[in-house]
Image (tube, rainbow over all chains, first blue to last red; front, top):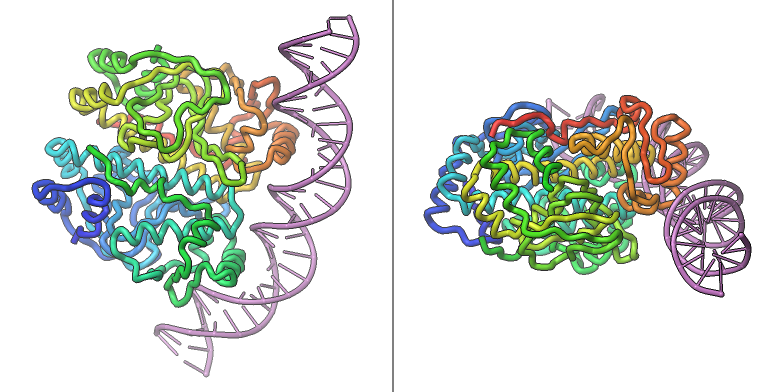
Length: 239
Length: 239
DNA sequence: CGCGGTGTTGAGACCTGTCAAGACGTGTGG
DNA sequence: CCACACGTCTTGACAGGTCTCAACACCGCG
């Protein structure tokens, strides 16, 4: 069930059989959620976190204007609101962007895990810091790039993150978001997303069709995006 | 020495005398840094973190174009690169924006602290998650607001954060950044920062003169910025 | 077959960037 | 004391990127 999550952990640090056992014991139950639901609301007191097994989630804030802004995307294997374990409530909503399969992890089990396995606690602290790095990179990208580079950056990040958990097929991956939802991620209007997408296609960098993304030349896309994967901290660490 | 830091911690959770003792023992030495220096470079292996006693630091990335982007500002009492404790290296630079007084905290002391005082470890995990929330909010602001609101948001955040550590005087606080550095924070050109600043002053929202910011009407500024301080997690938590 | 969501296109307005020039203030050296 | 250099701030005119609004095309689905 949590194989993708384990793959994500093992990309960074070795996980022993005992630890794997403890991690598998975190899940209390699984739930299915259809697309376009708000799964966690801003401000709610939390007693569990959501481990995404399959599908796409987003961290979203709604503006007064009604416009919604997405600050991070989550894919299979991600702990969508692990930060809720220390924060106790979120400053944003967790929304489903596709049909999802989700495991719930009670905070008291996380509590016990951190006591019994301080090394795993450290790894989870590490992972929330990687989420911070992703936010940081989005801020950099939103603040300093034009539309084309912003969109290119998004696709680069998703490709790399999906590859870790085995969700790519060659240069292609499933991508359930509408153009309107992409717009929420990179701070553009849906209309401009459409035009930028055509621009990317015209340059031979990204093809998006029937909810699939194809990246014919990842290196070229990375250059366009000024993408450097170091912020994802994919090398092994010693903990 | 670390009084501002303790104030920041105590805003969120009570700290016992024993814990305070342990925290004061973290500092190994203090260093002075002039403005405009790179104190930590992207990618460097780290064996200590920087606790800012006095002055301003920033988390910055440099773009290929030469343009520099700042992803977070740090003020007195902030652990500027606590995330370096789990990440081991940073994906960005730490730069000084003013003359600074900084305490260095060796990672092995942090290591011991987290073992001896798991509650403080949890609080520090919490604090890195607040940094993440700040990045998230910057991404939201950069992606979804016009220049005026972005700048208003920056000043709101700084006012609230400085007030916690007693660095405001009424509606005023010291602000050593040049307009060019403000531009790096909110993703604008210096020229447009200048015009936006005049716009804010014209609306009676912010005055910036001789390195001091005055906010005549904080409520009005918050409305302009669509600022909600909940992302700073200033209420008490139970850990 | 019609409907709603999604994607596409065009024209014009608006926001922000670019470039260039000048004003201002401060510190330095003569 | 003045002259000068330098960084910073300010202003103007224009170019370019993105938004807005509106209309239409497409497609899956009831």
